Length: 146
Image (cartoon, rainbow, N blue to C red; front, top):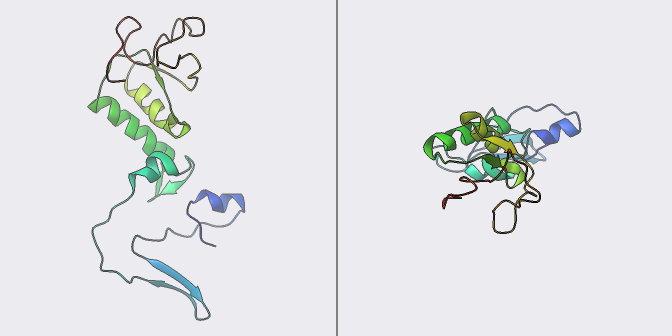
């Protein structure tokens, strides 16, 4: 069986053997199973969207947990782009681990509940809690970077 994510094997209780390497083609035909590398080897690259958006958080890519990579990316984002804020909200769901990482690297709370926001991105006073008064910046001076 071949699958795009390691979690597919968990669903059917199959054993994960290895990842198909970049530039590798696995062929199954009347001759059996073989690995072919039809292209000149280039420097190794990966699609960042696999870690950031496409992959399930419980997947393993290049031997690393997608969830843990996303958390580390959130921590790095907090170091490289600090902001004044009250709360970190993950949008879309694939951003949850990054929001947790950002939160761990800062003193900000994190929540998955974006219902406290109005369509303008500002908090709705009737629905927001006192401890989570805005997504970015303070409630009196929202940050333009949000």
